[in-house]
Amino acid sequence: MNTELQNFIEKYDLYGCIQCGRCTGGCPVTVRTNLNVRRFVYDSIDEDALEELAKLPEIWDCTACSTCAVRCPKGLKPLEVLIGLRGILVLEGQVEPTVRDALESIFREGNPWSKARATRSDWMEGLDVKVADPETEVENLIFVCCTVVYDPRVQVTVKNLVKILNKADVDYAFVGDDESCCASEAFNLGEEELFEMMVEDNTELLNSFKAKRIVTISPHCFNAFKKQYPDLKAEVLHYTQLIGELLEDKKLEFTKELPQKIVFHDPCFLGKQNDVYDEPRFVLSQIPGAELVEFERNKERSLCCEGGGGKMWVESDSKLERLAETRVKDAHALGADVLAAACPFCILTLDDALKAKGFEEEMKVSEILEIIGDLLEE
Ligand code: SF4
Ligand code: SF4
Image 1 (cartoon, rainbow, N blue to C red):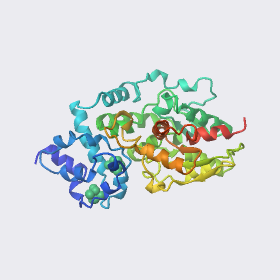
Image 2: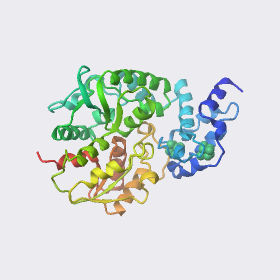
Image 3: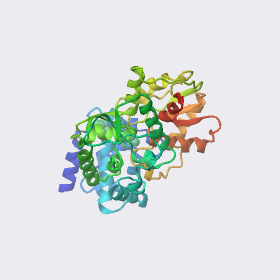
Image 4: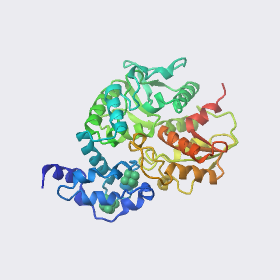
């Protein structure tokens, strides 16, 4: 057996697989693509199969939702076999230009969106924002996320977060100009070397502040910091957990009514991967006049929107309905006025799906911060 294969088998514990098929059974994208993740786990053991498997287009259909890992009775991470196969192509330079550009941009500019590093803090202009200083202790160090910083559709989330933190008199500070991509998507796209380098740099930067907690806006940064940054000193929180605390402690109160029906879509990187199900619902439940309804597929059974796993930079060939469109249709069938989520990727994919389905007149897709930022008294 060649060394590359031996390493691959050991890294992903391929002999631990009992071929039960639960991974494929739980995989949400199998309904619209050819992805059969169990097959990849099994076939990767074959001598000289890796190169051929890496050429199969469905390795790019995985959204890294992690349902396969959650369902695997042997504790394997089948999705990482697919990520490992992507890694073979990354090393050979055999990736789509969109993927190559995103990875190069993370390396050069610290974000996957080909935006200038120097403009990362432009969103702060005109706002009363506290920025961290390594000499001063701070309770909550806020890490924004590249998509929130640069994408005008979701930038409102961080602006509203500032409003809320100031209003509730929270001890906080933003990382500021030196913030870089958490590199979660570099990992999922198979660029392990770049990911490791970013983990090292970001750990050094984040540990340089005297912060008790790091609070993220994106569940992708949240998941990466919690699971893939072993040397971070501070506790890691998602913003829904911080806002939940503020509401519980009566440091924050929504004073305006929102008499609308809201359904919450669980982001995979928050829910399935980190069991944060209650806090987003608790925050929404505190909105005066709002009625919270649930998808039939919610929490552990929630349907992925296909925004993760590097899918923002990879087009699927499938002509079948996108999962985000199914989600939007389900929300519409519930009679929801608002389809809420707590993740920038979910918002972008669900918003696209809303337009594709033509429901913009009847329903809105909104980030929780987008909703609650308007419910405070000025
Ligand atoms: S992570 Fe999700 S999309 Fe990827 S193989 Fe596993 S279940 Fe399927
Ligand atoms: S769920 Fe785990 S043990 Fe079962 S086929 Fe998939 S990888 Fe193998």
